[in-house]
Length: 151
Image (cartoon, rainbow, N blue to C red; front, side):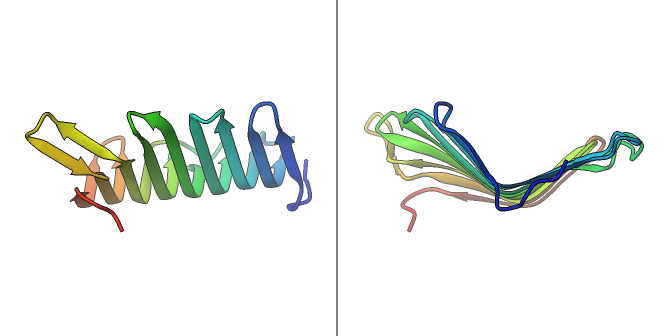
């Protein structure tokens, strides 16, 4: 199966759109590969998610350490959380059969979080960089916690 990389599939009722779809399937080995240039998902006004450069591959004979999914960038925003929104972003996510890694993952809240009159955080966020997780070991190269206003 192969498609023009400029093809676009859209399901307006589900709020899903795929641009740049291409896929292959090997009948003799069962291996397959799918590429999505841009994948967009909208669920009413509650959730918006956009993924760029999505590649899904699988080969039955390649073993557990094979790369299964890679995503160049992924952003998801949940609206209507208190008076703000929660946004998560991941760059260069790679999922293997036995682990995963990413260059950067951030979680942020747009708005104010308060703890009574003791603490007020404006637009807090947390970022984890250069993360790798294997079934048998963990590696954390950098953890950055950012609280306060974001520019």
